[in-house]
Image (spheres, rainbow, N blue to C red):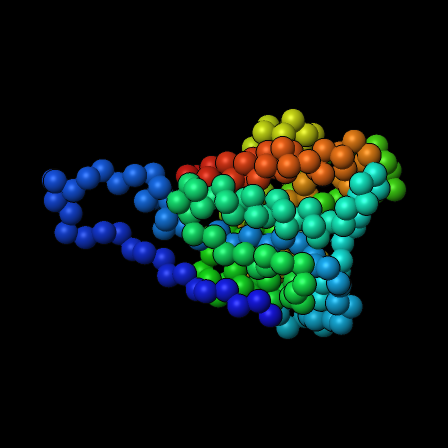
Length: 239
């Protein structure tokens, strides 16, 4: 399991005087911790784990994901590259960033990824994925969160829904991609084990020839990262 150093949230400064310089936006951002999960890995793990704490339903720990139909690029590579761009963007804005992985050669289950967000006291958990469909014309961005009746993490539903809505809005606006919708589901292990606001970002369809080619470019990947970062900032301002 990838070991990630724990960040400790900083509380408000005390004993400030009239001479204290104005706190910058970057300094304010530094109190937030964002955990980024580039979905999948080079080799999937078909061993199983509970879908949620105490669940009798077992699911594969992690799959290797889909593959670009035009480019042949595996999803796990796309997810990591966008994740690294997102880390760079958020770090420049002053946020603390925790990555569940920064290499392809890991073996980290979906539950373990969620627990990393919990252990690091993240203010939100952003899971990066790409979509696939038998319909090659399907395109656009979708985000996902739990339902309000989730048996494991219903308490973070409202914030997870808000995070999902804002990331969908800003990422679609930044890239020009179709904004599909926020899908609510209670069948995702990486959501059910997560105790902090969480979203899955399905960044586009690798089964769509045009979208697959776009997502293969550095320019578009950076736009995805910038849109996700803007949505995350909007979330922190509204939560």
